[in-house]
Each structure stands twice: as C-alpha cells, then as structure tokens.
Length: 572
DNA sequence: AGCCCTTTGAAGGAT
DNA sequence: ATCCTTCAAAGGGCT
Image (cartoon, rainbow, N blue to C red; front, side, top):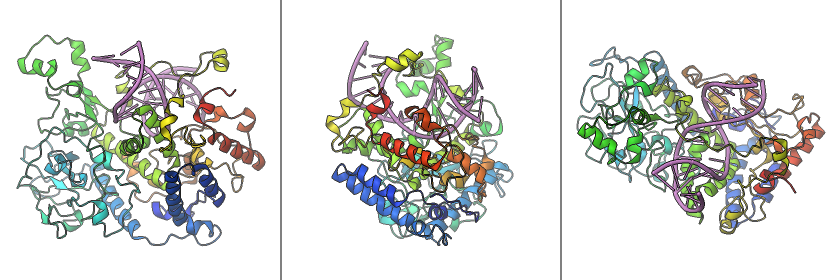
C-alpha cells in the first residue's frame, strides 16, 4: 500500500523504504506468472530478494516507524545530487568563472569527446570528460578537460563504496555517456589537461575528483570551471566505476553527431539550433560534437556527394537538399529508450531473435517487469537527459523534428466503428516469434502469460515517475494500484492520461535539491501512466467502490496474463 | 534504398 | 483536460 512520506523525505532511497508498492500477494502472483522457465525463475528469485530487501521494512511497518535508515549509497547519492544542483544553479545564474584566467566568463558543461579514453572502447565510459565552454569561445587549446572518474576498472571490481547500482552489468547511464567519440581516434591524453592523480589501485592516471579539488570548481587553466556531471548523482565517486561498455559495443545514442552551433550561442540565445550555420563536416570549429545533432550527410556516408560537394565546392546542391542536410537534433531518449538501448544487446544475446520488433516486445515486457526502483533510475536518467538536452539546445522543440521521418502509416486505429469491430489487426501479432522464444521471456513464451504482464498488475497500472517532475516524484513513481484498500479517497478510478506538467524540464524544477513532496503533484504522478483501458469493459472504467476496484484489479490481472494477441486483437 | 515493425515515453498541436 | 500524432533506438524484413 503506497504511503506517502509525510515527513518531507525527498530522498530516493529513503522513500524506497517509505513506500511499499507490492504486497505479498502480488509477489506470489508475480511468481506464478513468471515461473515459466528456469531463467525466469532465477530472475524472479533475485528480483524478489531485492524487493524483499527493499520492502522488508515496509511490509511489517506500515503503521510503524518508516523513518529511513542511513544507507551509505544514499549519502553518496545526496552528495552527488547536491553537486548536480549546484552545477545547475551555477548555470542558471550564468555560471561565471570566478577566477583567472576566465573570471567573469560563463561556462557551459559539454562532453569532452576528445577524451582519448572515450575513444577506446575497452575503457570505461566513466572516463568521460567535460570541456568548459568559454565565453566567448576563447581559443585555449585543450581547454580544461576534466574527467569524472578515471579508473577503467570494471565497476564490480572497483566498488568499495556502495553506490546506487544498476542490477545489470551495464549501468543505465551508459547510453548517456556515449556522446560521440566515434570520429576521434584514440590518443595520448594531452599533457595540458587537468592535473592527474595516479589511481593507487589501478595505477591509471586520473584527474582529481571534484571533492579533491576546489569546492568552487577549479579555475586553473587545466580545470577551469569544472562542474560536476549533470548526472553526477549517479556518477561514481573516485575510484569507482558505474559505467561499463555495453555488450554491443560503445555507441552513442545519437549517431554521427555534429555540434554545429556554437554552444555558447545556443545557451545565450534562444534561436533554434537548426538555424545555426554549420560547417561542412558538421563539427563545430572546436571539434565538439553533440550526440543529439545528426547531420544527415554524416549519418549516411562520409564519402557521399555531400562531402565531395563541400570539398570541391560544387554549387549544384539544390536548396532543398541543403535544407535536408541541416543538422538534425534528435529527441532526448526517454526512460524506456534508455532501457532498451542498454538491454537490447543482452536480450539479443539471450535470444535467437534478431528482429528488433520482437526484441522490443520482449524489452517492453521486461520494462514492465522492472521494479520501481529500477524504472525510477531510468526515469531519472531520462529526466537528466532531457535537462541536458534543453540546456544544450534551448530553442529546440520536438516539433522541429516532425517530418524528419516519413510519416508513418495510420496506425491500427480504425477510422470507423465497422473497422473497429471486424477488421483484424495484422500488426502486433506475435505468433512468428513463438518458436524461438522459449529461452527468452518472449511475448508468447511458455503459457503465454508472460506477454505484457508486468510483475504485478499494479506495475502495469503504475505511474511512471512523473516525467520531469521533482526529483522525489521522479524517483518515486507511486503505485497506481487498483487495490481497494487505502485508496478510498479516490472516488473514481483514475483515467489514463498524461500527468500535467509532464513537460516541465526546466532547470528550476530540477534544481530543487530538496523538493518537498506535494501530495497533489504526487497524485498527478499517479495518474500519469497510460492504462490500456480500451481493453476494459466500460462498466469497470467507472469502478469506484472497493469492490469494483478489486474487480478491476482482477480483471486487469487477467488481461495481463493474456497473450498479446488476445489483447491487441479482437477477442473471439 | 527506404519504409515497416514494435515497444514506451515525451512533447506539442488539436479538440 | 484530454486526445492524437510524431519521434526517439534498433535492425531484420519487406517492397
């Protein structure tokens, strides 16, 4: 039974213990649903262990003390959050350097793609570094590269301090720190980079952790204006490594990127990034690309006519083509996309399937099977991603990308009731994926109950953390449980829909280091997850009594156990 | 070559 | 406020 932390706890982990999302019955249900293979059983066991650990205090203490117990990872988390908030405050305030040689210049954190470590796929992406954009773009060679963490030691070998870790081998932040490095060959770190410290464990040079440096983000030429990674709340402490190379290699989320516009201009002005003229190679003069910018010319083939045109100065390129070749700033990845990006390789490795459509079905189901804590990581990650994106491209709008793809065919939604009743939907049939999915928790694996069946019905109904809400909200996606108990205050079952304010990715919201939990906003978060009510009979949609909600619960649970084909196709 | 498929979530326009 | 559409990743399949 979800319970809000009335004490104003804004700590992710603390709230983890304050809010219980699953009861034992749901866990049993989860077991019965998921025990379709040994592997699934193992996953369920491990997940239940984690959940039992997480909920150990909540299950028996709903009426008792729910005060969070001190956890070292939470302390680290808090520290990192404060770092992050401080960085954002600085950027919000202009982020001016306070010392020579750039005193008075605002800084902007950008990923340093010139970091040679990043170019080596065998090294941890945690070696990602950042450059400080000097204003106005002072030409300082090798400007102030700073490394977050330096040891390439795998996380599982180097963790001494417990941190919030992703259960999988690949850290969820991995997609975010894959900012482009493909176009930069490995090399020796420039000597003028920030002072390095030899890691006593690994012997690998590293730059000092911010905690080892000036609290005001060192202003030396080698480390001017250092600010923490915007995702620093998850960035490991020194000597730790949160990141690892994904199985499929080290790819950035935005392929073939080019930072065409002056970063500082983007920050200081509000014009749309695609209006910024861009060099032929799509790279800024500083050589700083950003993953979200995609130049079609680059994305296709470097040897394409675009390159020759630029090099040979052929003026024959039509204006339309010029238009088309404008850099394409892609949308930031949402939580599920980040999850997919991280887990795809794993699923592909486990399964014989290669089709992305099938893989995505599995991933979608696994996504629902994730615990709230795990999902919260990705929601938070996505929020950071959007935040960073909005910082880098203040004038960008998702609308800008409309039309970048060819408009998809009208989806399955029928245009007429007749179609609605009688037209079979050729799409979304998972039958072709049946045979090879035994080893995977495929959409139609085993008894077929796995398909689209989250760990619990409430998981399917649960709100994702309110998008871009306060941190607490984000990290604490409250359960939109259909269980009647304790939800009497909801006179009506919430209808699916977007949480209001879902687009609030403003800095102000995210800089709220200690946001107070608003019950109202929490409630909004509760309602934010779309629910497939189209599969429910209308009589249940208005379920208001505990009895009705219980019926809804069981009904939805039943639906959850149906193969996708039964859900997406008309029931015979 | 380029679209389709498939997933969830975010965003923004339309109603 | 809600609904609808588009796009984000991925890569095999298909036209």
